[in-house]
Image (cartoon, rainbow, N blue to C red; front, top):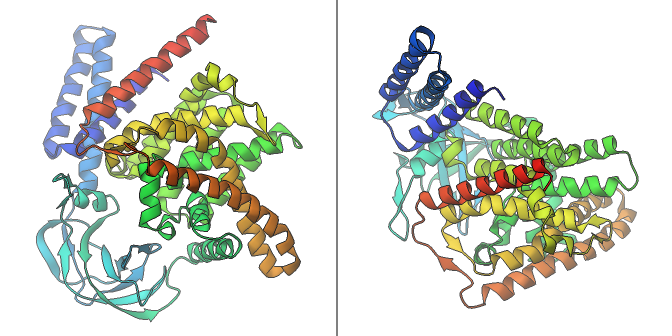
Length: 505
């Protein structure tokens, strides 16, 4: 990439990051634009030094990042309708005793809070209600209850959770707790998303019929991100063991399962067909989750990371990855800091591109079995470890927990994650097909048993590790400097490795 363009793009990322934490309004952007203009004038009028043109591009990029975030964050007062009626526009989020709905209101009316900043038309409100009666995506409902602006809250350790900024990422500025909800009519959402969610629920239903709990719940979490069905206790055990990232659907999960499909298909089909099938696999997994914005971002990242490993053109795909991330930030700059899914997808893909080759050269990887069944075990192990190391600092910073046994259990689990996801996916598909053609249940049951064995192995390890001493060290507050230093070290290791590769050492 051209150095001037590199500084401009890097500056944009820095500007968005800076504005995510420091709010100085458009004045900061204007200040940076003035600096950029000054450096441009110095370069063109007095001194042709490359330093001045690069400094100008950097200041311009930072200013554009700040201005884009400020533009996204600034608008008129929120207008709330006098009658709260709207459509549930995302799949409900199930809790232990309540359900959260995102409802996009239909009409405009009185100003609820004149001094509160947000969008002026058809606002989306976060609604929490009892688990029964249950409503679904696309239901048009009427709401009753007290509406209040979203506020930050204090966590158990006293730290302030930026809940307002997190929800503002999706243009949600108001919430309603303990709401009374009444159904008006069904089928008012996007018909394609509605059909996809029906397929997802049917997939999970047939999976539950073929695989016992809690293995079925884990399978649903691995494949379509249905972590709510796993229950808080099992999720906490995965968190304690350092494996919570396994059940968070991201570019990591999608890329790994696509690689497994490609490696399997290479045994029977051409390279080009295998790559195409891998991309189709990523798209299918994305569609099975309902096609939310987070999954779309994860799918884009996954396809890029997958192409990097499939073609070996890491530099070109890395450039495409940066461009994709840039476009996502232009559309919604708030995802950089307040969307953990975007962060995990981006970093996991970088790990697959740059860290996987380093792990592949390590002696302990070369001593692993080359193949297990048709799966190239060493390649999967190096890819999963590369992705895991890339996301570890941000997981530590975000969730504040560290397991002393995270590395060994990841070594025991991650290489088998692609196989488990593939088996669960095939089991669910076979279950769906058997509902149309009953004799196909003969095919579904052997797949279900194989999937159960791998899932039971995962849960057994997690149960064992979660009860070991010092399994989970809670860190009340991880300074931002910690992940920053970690990523500086990783960048240094990658540059050193690439230098050795270039010299042929």
